[in-house]
Each structure stands twice: as structure tokens, then as C-alpha cells.
Length: 570
Image 1 (cartoon, rainbow, N blue to C red):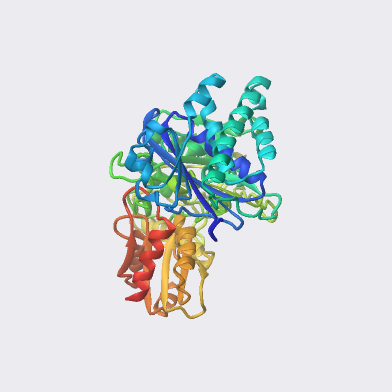
Image 2 (cartoon, one colour):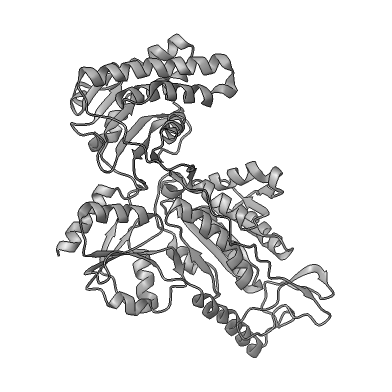
């Protein structure tokens, strides 16, 4: 029977074998069955070859994080079982070709020999192997055969009646093999009970960021492709014609950032999507945004560095880079969504924040969040308005007027009588270049007065746990769901979880809140504990206990639960 946390299924094979097809098909089938679904992938940086895997979790209750343990492993090629390693336990049903697993690998789980290739060949092509694999899984789980077969045919209907029919047959033959095995071995595997929640949709983090940008009024996108952030650009480009968004795949990241600045200067709302190496090239443009006080929204999908690092893996290693990037001092806002839903809402808000405060806003995600799918309620579009704060200029327009809150009136060229100047040099209130020391000091102070205004609007971090906790877990970004489930699994009722999605500036009063806890533990997907260092820098509170991971993978629920139990027992 399905455990309390549902079922975990891995599909493992080489790049180019269609693992994504199986993933999408399983998402559809489980979603149609009324179940909660979460999928995430790990893959090598190559188009073909190399071993990749996707993990699918399905449950009666919401599931939002990766578990290491597997109930079923579908091995599509030789080396797959070895790649999954210790994730396969004696209880794991391992389905694959007889020749693709060694005797030792077959003995590590409950082995089911399935002639994937023969089925696909008989039907006319290797691409039917993926549908047969989905059928095997459905048979193992005692799913509704007819309902799922119909969904399979529907999914492939656009490719013609013949292809749809053969996919349905491949699914059925796989289903028969899985069902026979389940009955012969008297397996207790079964699908969880339906969740009974209608109206859910399935998105991944990249799609949520893209949709959030569009909902925030984004009408210009410039980017140079770089994993894992490319998916955001590709999604928006796919909607550009219908929604009237100008999209430019630039020659490099420097050009992309400068194009977005130009769009904001002209009255548009531009987005740049990139990763750490691309952001490194944008740093001069970031400073240009700082001195010209031009709004800018940058989405940065983190991956392990330094250098090219692990280009298709995950890490939270760029926080301090984004905080200190740029020559000279100027304010900025850093956001880090903790879930697929929050990727939509925070990205949407980033555009209004950039517009209102005339500062760069950086949305930090990572490969794990961007490539993870989950079912969720449709995004709420009510109660939000796209805010355009620019003004109509008069004859005596001063672009950089010294205001009490530091926010000067932002004019748009051609909108009014005034001259809208912008220059990378220091300037006076009118935007004219100056080297006057007093004017320079006044401009620096003016720009930083905005930071105080921004801080007033920073909400309290999200807290879950008892009112007075003994151990306080500090996390940010994509660790949110894994920490939550790990605390539940570990049974740490005396521990609380303080999750941050707004990383800079930090909320006022944070020091007092942290000092109330007996023990502080930071959880971060990086090598040093960058957010813990930022907290110490800004509050003076040192978080000495840190659970860190920097091997290119996200935290699994099990490893995090074990680490949290050890910290709580100290």
C-alpha cells in the first residue's frame, strides 16, 4: 500500500531516450486520476548519452520535495540501476530489460524483466518504448486501465490516428506485463486514493517565473541562452506573438542586460533571464542601472560554479554574488521564491518593486526549482495592478530631484516637455555630469534613502512551528518544502522553521527574533552558508550550526530529516 508520503518512482536512462516523454505522460495520467504530483529531474550536460533520471512522486496529499527512497525504478538502459545506486532498496520494484542489469543489480530490488525494445520494435519504433514503460507502471499500481489508455491516446492524438493507436497498444502491452507481475509476486503496490481536489494545474518553476513576469507587465525580454534559466526565455518567447512581448535573443549577456535597460528607459518593462556565468557579464550593466536609477528585473537561475561548474545541476551559490555585484554602492532588491507558486507571485511583484523604487530587482531561483513540476491551484490574478510610476515631464524637469524618500520622478522620453537625461557618470538633479563633491555626496545619500523605504515594505519571513521553539531552522529559496517535510518526518515538534523569500533587504527586527531562539541552524544548498553570513553581516547574530550541501543535488527529505535530528539532539 502507498505510504503516508505516497509513492516515489524513478525513470532512468540516457539523454535522448525520451525520459521527458515518460515524465509528461505520468504527470498527465496521475493528474487525471485526481492525485497530487511532484516531479523533478537530474541530467547531464549533453544532448545524447550519459545517464539521467526523473523522479515522480504521487500522493493523496500535496507533495513538493524530493525523496531519495524509491518504490519503483524504471530502467530504460544499461547503467541505469547503477546510476540510481542506494536509492534502490530491497523493496524497490526494478523494471527493465533482462540484459540491462547485472545479476547483482537485479538482486538489489524486486526485479521485473520487461522487453521494452521488442515491444517498441514490433510497433514500429523505439519511441513506443516510453509509452510501454508508463503502461508497466500503471499495471504495477493497479490503475484504471481503460481510463489511462484513453488519456494516452488523447495525448498523442495530434500525431494522427495510427500513432495514437500504437501508443495505446504499447501502453496496454506494458500494462499487462506490470499487472501479471504484481499478481504473480503478490505485490502490495497500489495508487494512493484520489485527492478529491479539482481544478489543479501542473507547472514547473521556469513556467511559473515566466508567467509571473507576464502578469507583472513584462513586455520586453532579452536573454542569451544559459541553463537552467533558458526555459524562462523559451516559454515567454512562445507566448510573445499573442501577448505582444518583444523578445530578443542577444549576442551575449552584456547586450541582453543593456537592451533591458533601454526598454525600461523608454517606458517598457524588461526582463533578463540568465545564470551565474551570464550574470557575471551583466555586472557593469547592473552598476549602470544603479547610477541611472533605471528599473531592471533580472532572473538568475543558479547552478554550481565556479566557472562552468556543473551546468545542469543545482546550488544556492550566487546569493552573495548578487548582493555585492557591481562597482560602487547602490541599493537593490533580492528575492528568492521557495516554491513553484511563489515563483509566480514574487516574479510578478518584482516588476512593481523595480518600477516603484527605480532599482535592480534580482529574482534568485535554481535548477531544482526551475525544473520541478507540481500540481497547484490556478494562480490568483485578482488584487494586483501593474504599476507604472513614470510621470509627464515639465519644462523644468529634474530627473534626479533630491526628494525626502530618495525616489525621484521618472520621466519617459517624449512624454512631456522635459528633457530626460541618463548618463553613467555622476550627475546633478537635472542629469548633467558633475564632479562636485557636495553634489556627489548628496546623490549617494539620495539613492540610499530608497533602501530605508524598501525596508518598510519587507514582510516578516514565513514561520511554521510552535510559538516558542527550542531549535529554529533558517532557510531560503528552494529548501522550503524539503525542510518542512523533513521536520514532519523527523518528528521535531519543538523545532520551528523560519523561511526567507526576500533576502535583501532583510526585515526590520530580525535580530530580536533570532535571539529568542535557543539554537539556530541554517540549511543551505551551498558550501559555506551564504545566507547565514548575510544575517551575521546585517544583524550581528552568528549562526554557527549549518547544514550545507554543494554536490550539485538538492536536499532529499530523508537526508535532511537525519541531519535535523542530529542538530536537535546536540
